[in-house]
Image 1 (cartoon, helix red, strand yellow):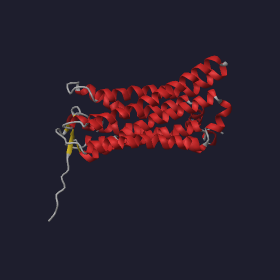
Image 2: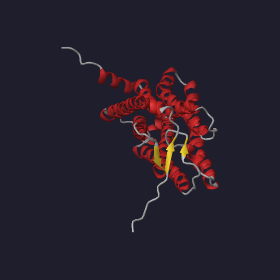
Image 3: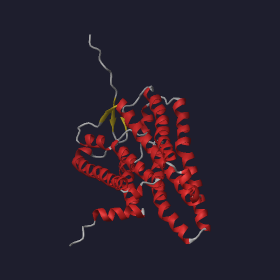
Image 4: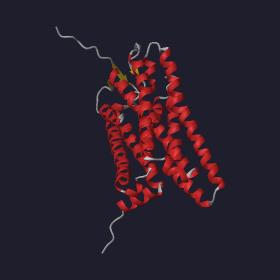
Length: 308
């Protein structure tokens, strides 16, 4: 006797006039996804092939951009499928997997920004100890923590959600984000409490550490000579720019999960798309144009060869 497998499907109800604009959506998102992959890959390629860029700061940039490419891949392929489909549906298990990938990689990015902040703190405030502190082993530990700790936290959240009973099968979003909790009949106390633990461990504590390190850097720069201030500005401003943009989008994602359903659908779509569109495309441009050494190699890569 064949056993029937009961699969729960979720309808993604956050798209606006998808029947009318499906091909416009598809081509725009396809082009953006290709741009994200190409731009991030270009910077990765330059750092990998140039020996003078094999330093901790650039290794963290490689990890960050690689993480951005994975982060985009967690969302864009499903978007492209949905734009060409009559119904925008996803199984609940696949939805939880997308949720896991999206948030574990997003939090990993935050942890990588923490590692970058510490690297700049040691380079500017303790330059003589830099080679001793920022060794290959230290960099490896930072990278290991950046990917393992968020994955562990989000896995527990996803497992807890998998066991919850659903009372709604319509998600007012375009992909599986924090609002999956609105589908549950009753949100368990464990998920609620552990959600706060995740917010502290993956958000507040890393942010406080970053603020501490950059405060120390700015105080040191203020008291130092013009050359030190210039070095601090050149290497820290790109990191701060990325941090501010990422933090603003992260705050939006936390808040939007608690906003009532009467929030304008078009506005919700625009803001949600920025989580997957703006940031992964923004990072390579910031590091490619603002980091002096990377910018120099970019110009050489795309400038025409001299005529003989």
